[in-house]
Every structure is written in structure tokens, then in C-alpha cells.
Length: 117
Image (cartoon, rainbow, N blue to C red):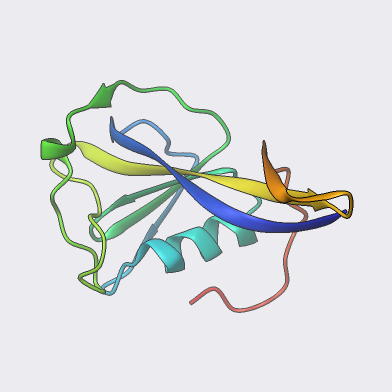
């Protein structure tokens, strides 16, 4: 079985996951994802200039119109006023007998070494 991590977009939510907060002047979804993986958190939330990581999801799903802050790379939205763009780190697995159908399962991430900045 092969596996790799991916990020599943859950939508725009009220600011609700605040186990860990990181502030950066050049926030991107990728940088926030790396930071949360490094800290071993499965939920990733962005709200320019803040990166949120959490173990549980508590919050209300909002309209995408509430998450229009632009990330530092100008590629994705990074939340809005009192809202976050929320993602969940997933593990994509494939088996040698059926490589065309990956299975997404919530990630339980081991601690990582490295530079997430």
C-alpha cells in the first residue's frame, strides 16, 4: 500500500480551530499546511495573516462569500472577517491491486522534522 498526504478543502467556517496560531506576513495555504503537519494537527485554517491548526472541528459553515481574503501567493482565499478557509489533512492510500481508486482517510500524522517556514 502506498500513501501520501493531501489537503481537502472543507469550506468557509466561523473561526473555530484555535489550538495553535501562527502569524506570518506571507501566508499561503501550503505554508500553513506544512506548519500544522509539523505540529501534528489534522485541521488547517487560514485567515490572512493567521494560520490556525486544530485537532477538532467546531464551527459553523458559512457562505464562500465570507472567505474572500487573499493569501500571500494570490492563488487561494485565506478566510475573511471572523471566518477561516478550512482544510483537513488526509492520507491518500492506494493498493497494488486497485491503483485507480484512492481512499481518503483522516490523517494521524507522525511528528515531522524540518523547516515549515
